[in-house]
Length: 276
Ligand SMILES: NC(=O)c1ccc[n+]([C@@H]2O[C@H](COP(=O)([O-])OP(=O)(O)OC[C@H]3O[C@@H](n4cnc5c(N)ncnc54)[C@H](OP(=O)(O)O)[C@@H]3O)[C@@H](O)[C@H]2O)c1
Image 1 (cartoon, protein in one colour):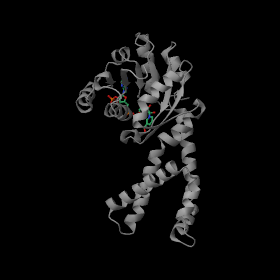
Image 2 (cartoon, helix red, strand yellow; image 1 turned 90 degrees about the vertical axis):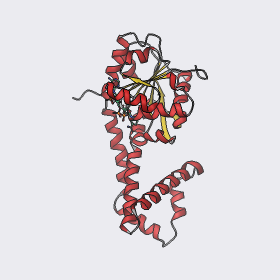
Image 3 (cartoon, protein in one colour; image 1 turned 135 degrees about the vertical axis):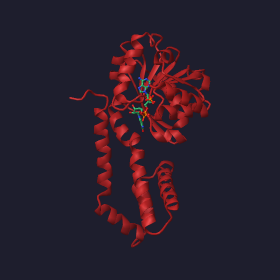
């Protein structure tokens, strides 16, 4: 299955489902005719079929029945129920690979909902998948091995980097890598506000801030150097950068960001669980 034709059902073609579907077709990884998306509302399905160029409807059972891979992209509280429903109607009897991107739902939760021995891979992508700069972390369930991970990786690779980690890390991955873009948008917005405050037009300030973040991220990833060493390169003795860094430390920038990740990871672990 790894190199051949793969039919993919995207159950829940929302923000992430659309990004993944578009990415797969654009990369030429999956033919549009081999993709079948679903949503809850018929009207939305018709709009999406027209805009995405692959079939989108509301029939989860038919989509799953015809698929080699079922990509579950619904909200966590919907995902287990949906999986139980399609399994109850025999739509997983051919043992497709089930890949879930739902935050907080473990492979055991998913295997339990499927109620049969289907291979499961839990994936955590992020929205930069939309522009090919995503980060996806994969972890296997009990009945998935290298072949299933390779197949899942094949689906996410066109949208950015892919890593494999043990499941114990997945809530932290969610808090850092999936929520992380939202934290960085706030940082970009704040940097831009500083530029506007000092007289730059907003559009220019936003471009400068975003490019500084993009460039800095690439320096970390492409040089492999520690961020602190890269920061030291920018920090001329008695210069403007060290003066600003001290002001940021006064505002506890580091601990606020680190605590934000800690809180997102804690909260991710609660998603999809019954409220007590
Ligand atoms: N957003 C992120 O940054 C991000 C990152 C990583 C992982 N995730 C995970 O990705 C999942 C989806 O998030 P999202 O932001 O893409 O959500 P979203 O935009 O709200 O999309 C959810 C989609 O599910 C559809 N849906 C709801 N019930 C359905 C059903 N019974 N059958 C078929 N489709 C159904 C909705 O259809 P309608 O439009 O018709 O209501 C909608 O298209 C979540 O589990 C989240 O934890 C999100």
